[in-house]
Amino acid sequence: MTETRKHTTVSIPTQLHKKIKGRIEGTGFTSVSDYVTFVLREVIASLEEENRDEAFTHKEEEKVKQRLKALGYIN
Image (cartoon, rainbow, N blue to C red; front, side, top):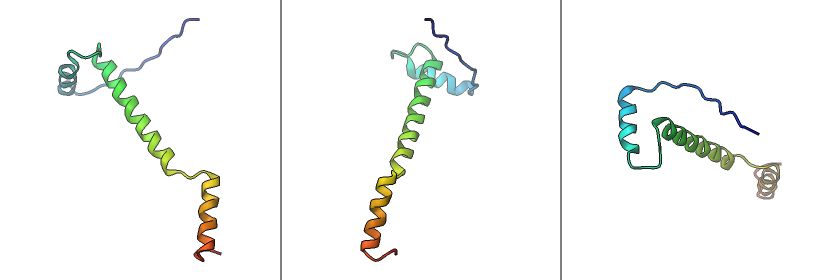
């Protein structure tokens, strides 16, 4: 089964492109596009992790409510 990769084009300033191109010299990145894709994936993963860390599970929320009730903060 052949997987077809779909891409889109994103424009970045020429100066930024030049900086990235210089930065990836001698690395495993074969193009500016590969590097930008890597960085964006890392940023998105980091943001998604932050969101997971902030949310309580239903079970955790119930424990907090029980503790607050026991301390007299809520009825």
